Length: 548
Ligand code: 16G
Ligand code: MG
Image (cartoon, rainbow, N blue to C red; front, top):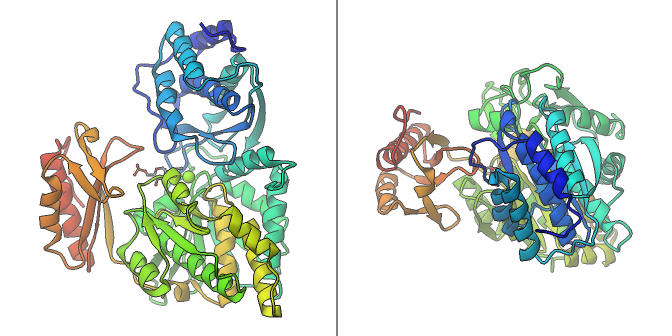
């Protein structure tokens, strides 16, 4: 048994109070996520994992965020944040899953022992953990369970209260870099607003203000946080009208609102009546995703999703790098298979920017983006950010322009590195980035939208007996198993003009997702239905046959 500071008696006691239900838990794409009433035991175990991870990293501060993002209010979830504000290192997911599924106290203690042994953890260190949560009614009880785990593990922990997910990532990075050469900022919520607002003001200096934007906050934590941010900005410089800001009424969180709803339904959220020419955007429930939209003169809804944001950001940064005379800095974009085919064509054909493809999930995009000097990564669903490498940051900071124009561009680039949350996608920070670019270009949403026209696309969901039989390769763009299925998909796809379709098991839901795009809406729907039917037939479909 472990000799460490972990208090075995307390772990046993905590396990009594927070018994593990008969559920198969897995640390998925974004941590543990499910109906909130099944999560109690997970929370105290996550407290222990967070402490162990901190011990492993010599007491560096680890973050824990309690949220289920865009998922329904009755769900909740928890994820761990590594010291530099990144997602938990993947190699820890397996053992976290093992601990989550351990039921009796002896098994729990022996899994803890194996983690200590495997990672050669120095138990003399002191663990440091911070945590925060969103507006879900289930959060307070889950926080209490988390705290039991942290206490049992002897961790020093700080409750940062209600925060957006990206704010928690920001805080973790600030705490761990405080006093170093690459100090990220003040580790307070105020510090976050100050950093973003100062950078924003620098970038907006001398530019005429645009009309007020409407921001749908999905009745989630983004609403109070955006209100707070607005206090730091003169409304003559920039103003926002917040819709869906009711975080008190039960049942409203994410209900027919928020970035996921708007992206999937391809329509405006509840509470937003679109006036032609105005700008609208939506955050998701924990404010780490952003999509824009507008209505044209005929009143038709148009979506500007993560792909459009990536294109806009890459275009602007490439121009700025050139104007600043630091074109040794290379810019790259990272996408997933869900990126609209037209967006990839625009990036490679028009912007001539390198594009790499990775599997779904922020951790994959983030790491790939780190390979560029400036790595722009966005999922079509609106989660993304821009990463500046240490070398790029240094070049921007130390270069001296030969002309006033070059100096202005360098100042703006420097401000961009501070405006953009480099730990993770951040709806507030990303929105400010988009607002800066539109202001600099004097563009409406409609003008921004003209970069390229999205191919019509459709996402379908098929419930099957066992989704783990669906195995993919090539950044999830092709199936290797079940055998032969990819060939059948290829045959179907070849019948459609500009057709593309792929199939992958969801990492967050018990279902298989089917994506399809083609030249026309009718063709797209027909393609999506045909592939969904194939998956249903050959993959062991459960329940009623797919419909679109
Ligand atoms: C999670 C991921 C998101 C991804 C989505 C895919 C993070 C923080 N979030 O929400 O990036 O797009 O899962 O869901 O990584 P799916 O596997 O169910 O399609
Ligand atoms: Mg989210």
